[in-house]
Amino acid sequence: MNQQTATDYLQTLSHCMLTTEVTDRQGTKLPLDDGADQAVQMILETRASSKKIMLAGNGGSSAVVSHVQNDLCKAVGVRALVFTEQPLLTAFANDEGYGSVFEKPIDLWAESGDLLFTVSSSGKSENIIRGLKSSENLGCKTITLSGFGEDNPSRRIGDLNFYVKSNEYGYVETSHAALLHFITDRAKAIIAADQKTGVA
Image (cartoon, rainbow, N blue to C red; front, side):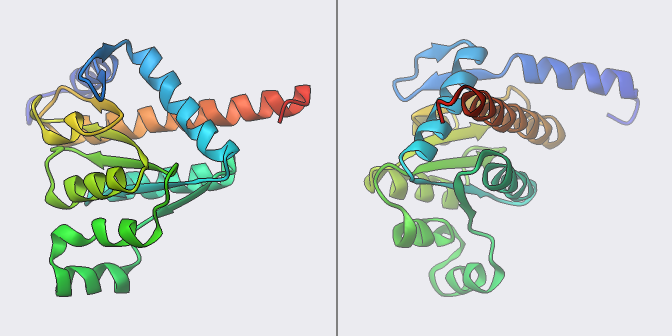
């Protein structure tokens, strides 16, 4: 990495983005464009049914999901929330263990038909897996974004799973952020087009 040029880095990043793998719950591979379109439709369906979107991530991925929450609320017009409010997060972490910090609020707020996005570079953080399983038990739809190991557990749990083939945080996190920006921008564009034609 220390001998790599900016051009080298960006070329590798572009390759990581364009080779992102998408699978469904059964492990069936989908073209990237089809997977992204499905994610957009899941957002639009959640909005149309007046349900909400929840987002979870740790560290850099937490920053990514906070940005996405902002875009979903402001640009897409769908109710969205993240679980990063410090007093509550630290209360759950202190009293129940850090593995509970997404599971517990999901148990409190999730309803059947809601949508959960998880963003995790490793795809195997305990709190992410527990959050996914809790939302599944409550009848929520799930979309995962992960990287690192191809056999990470996140991509075997979600209804739709995006996997970036890299072990570098920078490549994985940036790929996740760019993909989610496309998805929210696409949802916004569809809503705007529908409003112009009187559909929405």
